[in-house]
Length: 176
Image 1 (spheres, helix red, strand yellow):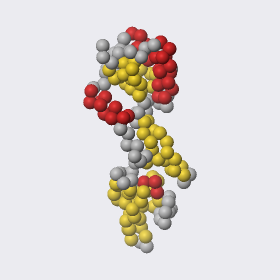
Image 2 (cartoon, rainbow, N blue to C red):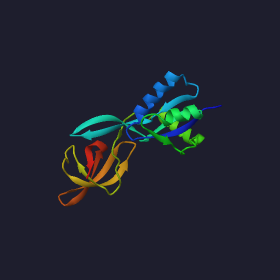
Image 3 (cartoon, helix red, strand yellow):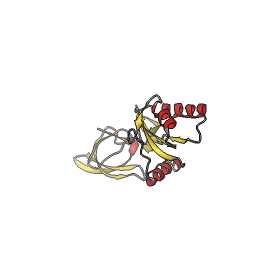
Image 4 (cartoon, rainbow, N blue to C red):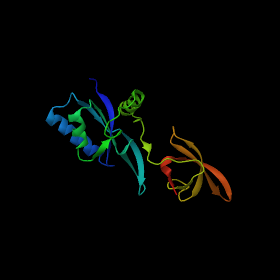
């Protein structure tokens, strides 16, 4: 029987622990044929805290672990009884992922956009932001345009009573 991908629901923040515990159990019980892969897709994001840029890993799907396996009584209960697991997506009868979902999941894992870490915060047009870096530090403006590819924003700032467009990096502003 061919292994299929299933979604396992976990406590949020326990994804890596669940993956590690499952990998240990699979090794101890020699079940590599029945459970072949366990994935927790992540991405690198840039976060600004106390005026310092930090790169950290963020999970694409918090609270979920993806498992390639053959469902039988042994594998079902091995995963279900792992600490941190709340169950399978689909309940008592796990439902395998559709092929297009599997392909997009594997594409995220295999081809992460690792060329440049993305900002941890996303901005929306007409949103108020505070400039935290550069010559306009401490100014408040309104997001006019967002360029995700370049990681830039055009913010309308009032200078001498007139709205003035200022192009800023995502990391130079913070949400209000």
